[in-house]
Image 1: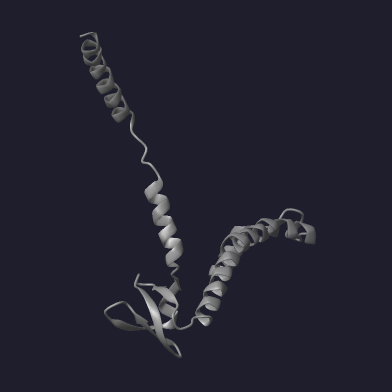
Image 2 (image 1 turned 30 degrees about the vertical axis):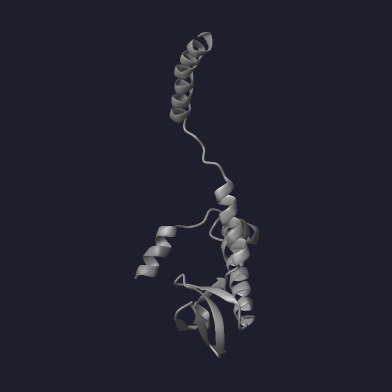
Length: 148
């Protein structure tokens, strides 16, 4: 019943009911373009990230410093199949290999902290005006002292 009403609602195509193959192809072009865009913008980059993560997990060794999905940073002490023992400083934790989100490079993190520390914060217009006003108010007093 539903299929018959749906077919009736679609109506008869123009041209007597039979569409040429080129017309059908032209109707599918937008759909094919959407699939291509999704492939290149969403699916392909995600597969690439998954493959990189899989390779990283396969290359884990004792002594590597890693970050877990929960945010714990630790050094690998032991690897037993899919279980990894991490030394967190005062404690040791066993986590599944899949819960390791990436390697932790302390040198890179230290460089980022230094870079942030060197960056000077931008001053607001109000603070610049206040400094200028202070400089202007001090200037007449200094002039008086110089004259005396």
